[in-house]
Image (cartoon, rainbow, N blue to C red):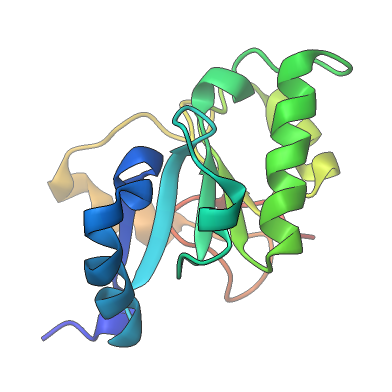
Length: 151
């Protein structure tokens, strides 16, 4: 009995870019399912295809986030992905956040939300209820299972 609008599917970049999958992706979007492109930047995406896909969230792969330092190439990639997502009016989440410094830097870059061990280790399904009930997003009413970085 779950409403389609309450569901967000994460699909890897390569699966989203596969030609045979675009009809299914568009059908899911038409019924109200949100789509997230996971591990963005690790596949072979085409920006011209990206602009035609009906996704609502772009997830920056942890391989870039973990190595990100002010001024290095990984930071430039993370910043660029954030700017692309925001320019397309999409939500952007960074994966692999393991320190407060990375979390704070992502907030400065304009990232919407973050996931990673700094925020929470994986928990068993029976513990998710108490974890979610204790969760307080930085922006009231915000949050998608990741820590909301919007101020």
